[in-house]
Length: 69
Image (cartoon, rainbow, N blue to C red):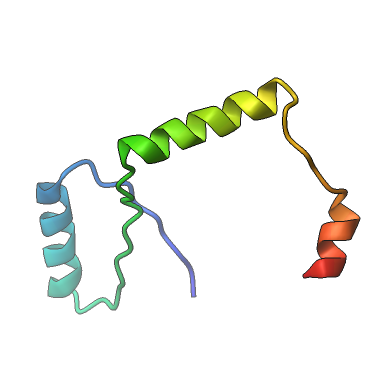
């Protein structure tokens, strides 16, 4: 089995492609990477990025993380 990833630009492209695949009786699955972030989520991400870039975060060695999981 081989995977082909296509980045669709709009809903019309998706409809046309799926109709084409259906007409050929291809088996396929669709996945969506659409995640809605709230303004609070965005602010938290930006804060964590700033903390990381300024060195205000703690970390553990990868070997310690691997042992835990």
